[in-house]
Image (tube, rainbow, N blue to C red; front, side, top):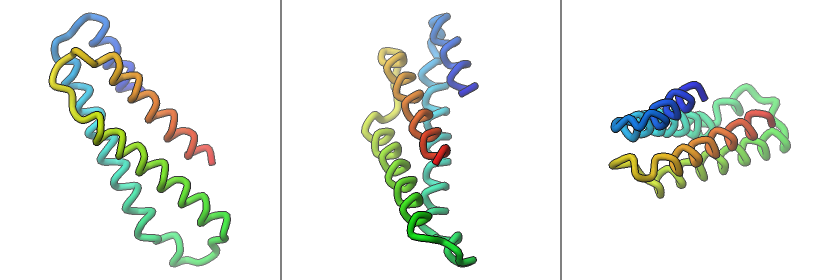
Length: 105
């Protein structure tokens, strides 16, 4: 969220490199989502036992949400200029909101 706030300040002053900062932020988000997805897919939490059907359901919900975020990031792609930066920031906040929702569960 702090990185998005910094990005918004770059946009506010019409910095020509704002799209590059956005690409770095989204690249970082994508990396962490893929890493988290790998953790979910490896099922390390199952090895210690004690997982219930409800736990598995929650894991599946998290997996679907992360996969959806990654799909949207792939669809939107990287920015080549500042033309769509404001819309991209709205999408970034949407990703953040989705992640917070699954973190609350």
